[in-house]
Length: 298
Image 1 (cartoon, rainbow, N blue to C red):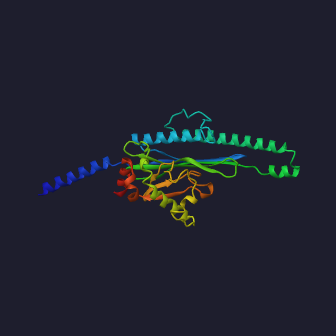
Image 2: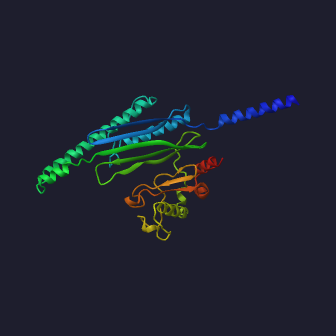
């Protein structure tokens, strides 16, 4: 009897060890933060990059570096043109990688802001319709540019890990704007970026969930809106509410939907956002979305 019990315990431990070895591990990250300011501009940069070993973490890190390059090298560009070359150093040296993009982008923001201020001041000085007092008053105001780059790990479960790309930029105009790529969901089986968790072919069927989510968004802001009134608060081409350009991303409570400024509403309406529970969104998930839902339920 004793021998049987020992064998049973050993077998149980073996099963446990195998299951632990096969379970996806958490993706450990290191946070980098830098900030700087000049006479006409300021910049901050916060980024989380994986430090875990293995191909999954390496693939996620490589994609996050690609996203960082794509955003920062084109920031302020209206035509998606690069302003400086990509980092060509050792990708394993994350400190050097972060330093390169921070210095390049900070220098770019400083140069563009200084040029804009100098051009603005020259225009004002040449305006003969203004008095010297008026010119002095306008020149006393210096529109300082600002840019905050953020790429942070925000959620993880056994199936996926989520990073959020959301930046703020102000270029001396009436107001600043939020830019970036939104939630980036990575599959922990191979470290690949999940392109779609929601089946976009079913956008028409998801309308009731989108309407409810937007009503909740405005209600939280203090506006009582009915389903019949919702279109009075939105700026749409047609009657249907589109799925957001930023792919919804998973959280503990469900999928997070975020619409960018001007995407479906005016600037004053902010960025309509809401959570759809996994039970409600389940019929409209892709296979990868279903796998993530099941991982949250465990």
